Every structure is written in structure tokens, then in C-alpha cells.
Image 1 (spheres, rainbow, N blue to C red):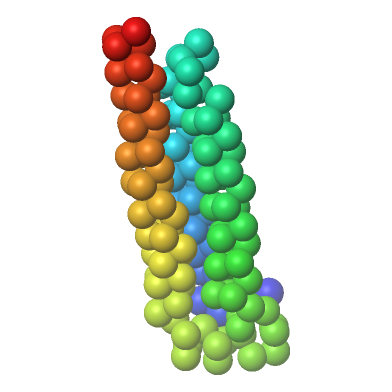
Image 2 (cartoon, helix red, strand yellow):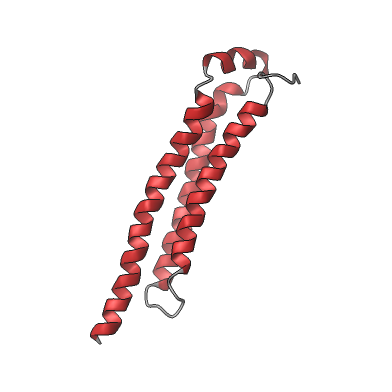
Length: 125
């Protein structure tokens, strides 16, 4: 394998960027879920939603990596593909991470609503 820009290095770094962005978003949702104490009435629902989000994020990551990087797999014309699609090394991980981050923001709102709902219910009793 060549040690220049036609090697697997730029592809690997691009993929690591996508995985890191998705991992960061999943970690954000899990940290929000952990703020809801286990005796809280909505703790089980928050844990279920966080698990569902993590599964959906991993599926989206797999789909995005496959569709974004499948064109680079044939080794015979990898140099040509990297030259033509060099912008994909930046745009694919940004697109994958942006979708997951938008979903994590929405999940953060849901987690806050679940936390407040249980607290308001306990106050009114």
C-alpha cells in the first residue's frame, strides 16, 4: 500500500470522524438519561428511549458509512475515486454526525420533559 494520499489513511480518518460524532451524540443522550434517578416514575421510559436512540444511531452510522464510502472500496481505481470524490472525506462524516446530533437534541428535549413530568406529578399528589 502506498504511503501517500491514495492510501487508506484519509478514508480511515474520515470514518473515525463519523464514528466519533455518532459516539459523542449517543453519549450525550445517555448522560441525559442518567440524570433521571432510578426511582423516578419515568426512568424506565427514559432508559428505553436512550437504548432505542443508540440502536437507531448505530444503524444510521452503518448505513451512512456503507453508502458514503462504498465507492472507495475497489482498490484498482482508489486514487481516481479519491481525486474525484475528495470532498466526500469531509461531507460524509459531517452529514452522518449532523443527523445524529439533531436527533440527540430532540431526545434531550424529550428527556427533560420526562424528568419534569415526574417531578410535577409528585408535587401535585
